[in-house]
Picture 1 (spheres, rainbow, N blue to C red):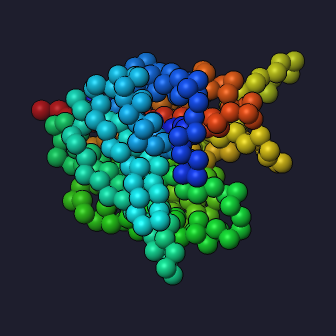
Picture 2: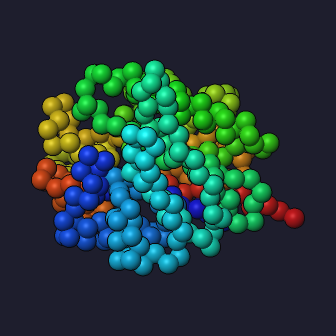
Length: 303
């Protein structure tokens, strides 16, 4: 048995500009969602920058009859969440959910939506933490918040791990607006590129395969020009680079060790797909993120 997962920051409804998409842009989003759910048969699809009306529109236009829906577009005080998850009900039980907010000195920031899925014919849950952290464009005053986000998400991962008897299967996914090497993820969340070290310190470290996706997808070949992405997010006004790997999927040690489920790193990548190829680099569209994709496989049980 396998389960496929994807995250996409749709750009349809940022918190500060809800329901901004034109009919044509909603049509493009529909095409992308249809590709993910029908062609790639994604089992857990998490979306960011989305509203309740976007969710209803996508369910109706794509025909997501095989999917349950977690509507994470919630308000907690002044905090607005803008995420949603579609999940295939033939493979996964209805999840429990929790909204995670950090309160630091009276200042609240959104950390993640936590969902616990129970795959069919299994006894242990898979915990999914879906995050959309604030933009780095907000200025230096949010740097402390970014460290806080990493630490608080780390606390919740540790809490989920301690609640499990067997090796805990935990997946973190979303748009962190930080690169894998930034302090919030590397130092405070403790998400590393080093698989061997993760296996030596499974209670401390997480494995982030998106360290692999920090540069050009294809090597340069003399006499040819390859036009392709160098990350998951395109920023037209970038000075040092247009590209950032802000969208990531991160795994607990169980997925690369002795856990019931194993990640397939060959099937873990940034999904460069039409019609986003033309939209992303235009600088004049709402779309600036590619989806990211992964697959986990259940070990065969003999006897």
